[in-house]
Image (cartoon, rainbow, N blue to C red; front, side, top):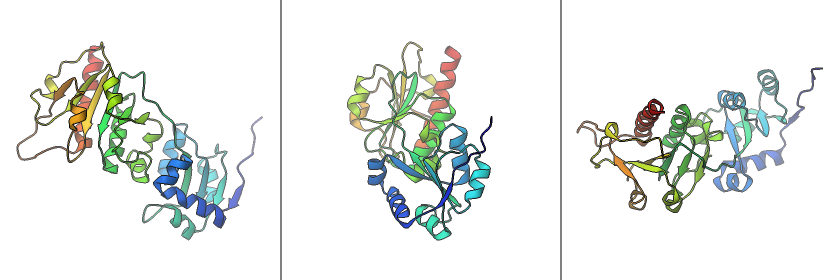
Length: 258
């Protein structure tokens, strides 16, 4: 028999609002392992992928029940000024949700990314979208990459940070991997299109930072170095754009080989 039960809607208290506001700070996101997620579209995307919120705060709680009928978490009604206090965007939508930060480990992979010093949230979020779009197995990152669960990265990733496995690690981790480690280096001698690939080994595609490229310590761990040919009119490509080109080229050729 189908149940007509739905979550009870309660007003947002000042104490609760104060506690939630702390999640706007990185140190509290880390200690609580929770993060605030904004917008109806992003929440819809996450729920569609089976990722449920811990609680929802909205100025339109009845619309929450209507739009997400299977939701079983607590729902809190808020005033506009309260919601604006929680939101990071200048013109927030009428909903904010609290999500648990997932615990991932990148292992047992066929193709993954290793990001060395990616510090722009927009680039990092876009790279997560690329990895998801081409069905990569995960993303490993150096410790000087920007925070994966910052609001800007979450939005730029369209929520994919919650299901694409990622792990913050170091050069020692990279050195222990037996995979082919293919780095994008602007002054290398081999074009990406001429790269020899094998299905016998896993692959790690290594991407450097926007300003400095791949660091020397990471470069010593590379198996192969390749470059993407571009005109002399441009010095370099955006990190996310370069990632997209490399991931497309390598995954398409691997699928042809397998």
